[in-house]
Image (cartoon, rainbow, N blue to C red; front, top):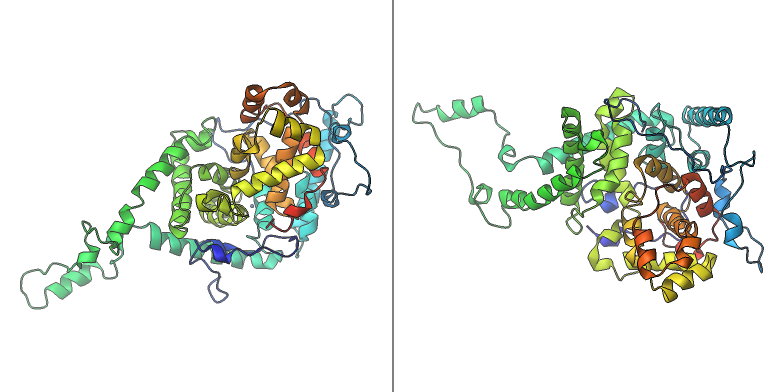
Length: 462
């Protein structure tokens, strides 16, 4: 992959640009060519449990303007005073009726916004930041818009989707098919006719040394095809381990096998188009939420094209953090070590006591626990249902995915402050490498949005 195509913006971006051409070689969009996730349509036993708050209190909606630090200069608000926000009824529980009304209002607001001829992306970001409703394909459509896969203009959706899906089909045919099919430009009947023109013996088709399956030359199509065998095997092993608790991914049904095959195509195509990165273990976990949301869209046409849509959105998602997967860039300003340093700075800015205890007293460095958090976008730390809620906020952040991701990681530390201050190296490392699953996700995200910003990160966020 050409690293020189990544440019650091001069100011925060409000929406995701189309970075497909800069991340995936040969996938540039051409104007002249021809021209959304829910939990519905699952097989028996594939339903996900609904998220239930653990009693920490309800969370008030947070506007996108809250991403900017508004505290007066010269003040140092204690982050601990903002960790818990009591519910309206004072008991940490919202009545079932109030919850239903709030969910209906959220769904109505989103449906109205998505029905507009021109989508207001800032409004969509505010809605998504507070959590998108399940069902009806609303999350699938919203994610495609937030990732820039769909344009704001509603009338352009059909044309753009047809164009994107056609490009994917061509790439798949070119790069994933066996070399044995590459010369199938003439039919079998045409070959027979040509070989019998002189009424002589049947002539064998000529094969150049470079096209022979046993050729070991670097320019051989077969040699290039076989060099990805090991990658394919690794992808297959990883997909078998993807969310083993969900039959959608790990079951032995025809449907689950089809899903794994589609995900393998996406990951292998990405690897071939990005030889500098190829496939890195864990990318399957990043792809899983996208593919799940798109393939369970109740719109049959969208669900049938989940593989193509997932590929393009997977590329856009990784464009914000692709350098984290490149070991040669670990020590650069865009590498994973630099991002971990920014997380440490963000923690120090918001709670120096906790930062000092982790960094100096117990020496629990961020690379010991946050490397997986950041590279896999928290997909290994929470339940699948919670991951989708967290990603609503990640994708809707106007300053980019990485900015909100670091905020969430910092909030994860702050929410465990009491336990971390009492722990030693072993206790804290174990706690952070096996993050508690009973955390209230809305509360966690509320803490993340209230953090004092690490302004130095804005120039690096995509």
